[in-house]
Length: 459
Image 1 (tube, one colour):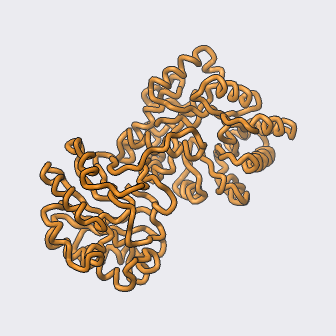
Image 2: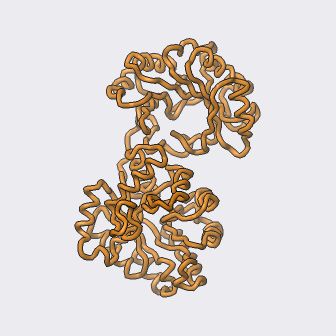
Image 3: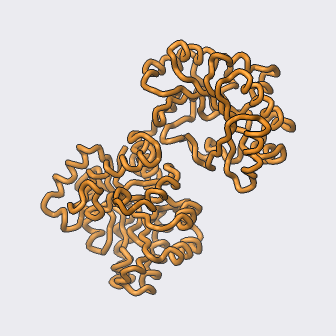
């Protein structure tokens, strides 16, 4: 689902061929377009477009360039326009622009604060424009008690890694435009890599900033496909992954109509097929994504019922198109050892590379060494040890088996090393975890591969 979260179709640039532009967007697979208001007249035009075209939604606000033109009466009018209008999904474009300074800074700051109050009153997310005013914008958002609760997006991101981290820590999304395709945008491309895909939105900011292939031409929503291709390449994802994940992001932030997907038994990311066979787990890790979302990489993994062996195998008819099959869902696969073994045998008979992601508590679950039973069925086992010590393991992972679990997981890793071709141990980059000690445990103590997983980045 491709969604252009920032367009200016009301601009004169589209006066002659707006219908054709929207038709090209449909043909390109753009499902929704958010028309972002900039001045008072633009608010009215955005509402007209949203009323005329089912796929167009509006956000209402005043760009900082026009802050000097806004009085209380204008603000009241915008508020009335937004009330009880289901096609109004956000407040913006608002913010600060200390680069061009087309409005006095004090006006910009005052209007930003007033629109943040309006967003709170209407329970709408905000679309933030920020140029050469990073500290000031962040200070205002942090002081607004519910700004992070409301949520929003910093559009057309330009900044450094520290600014990016501050935005993400506020709980905001970041949207990138096709300027990341430009030759001189290596810094932005690196920041795309740093940003979790679950916090990225796509935008054209049309008619501005066309992709590299269309430089010198007017930008339009259909060109969002160039941006999705670039982000897919940078993130090591498929174009379908980027479309699905960023589309879900936009729908959740702006409460756009969205057909909730059925829970997935199998789900694809890149060229891997993942098998989600249980939501049960013997850990209650404080960082686990299943405690705050049903989705991983845009797939709904909240099972209603655990699938049977037959139901899982039925979904593997097209397994040859994938590089590997991975037992990894919203729970601990080895809680269903017989299912893992039966499905893995089916996959190995098909010549499939099979990987198991586990918390390493299989021997504790069954009170015996189960690793030999996996020999010949698994090409790779990845064990989530997560932390650097027994103390942190008990505090952060809250294992069902209590004290001593950390040591037993390490024993499981050692057993895997004896009969599984490839074994790795993964750790989470939590502030309280000593990753140097984690690396020592993996490489020196256990003699297996070492990997770091970023907090809240799954799949």
